[in-house]
Length: 115
Image (cartoon, rainbow, N blue to C red; front, side, top):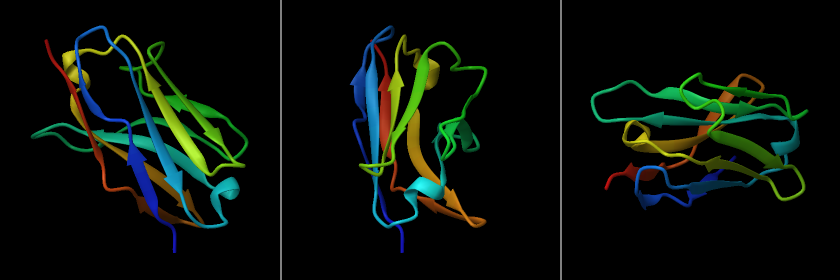
């Protein structure tokens, strides 16, 4: 069983930065794809950024150049550095881990960008 625990959300002013962290249990982390999704009120959950086991990354167009995803296979963690935050980045952010066709989710962490 894989468990994902997110941390690092909060309230930040426009233009500010936050770093989200996701810690995974289990021994499959290094073989997995990991990513961060977000869901704003009234909207569907969307993929924000992802990183493969070989550290290939993918970003949604809306966050390219502002967000950076990174993983540490030794520590079983995947982080999302978010810079130049905008009000439209406000959402609940979820960590996701996929391996063998199975996806696991964290509980979510709230990010609010507001002045």
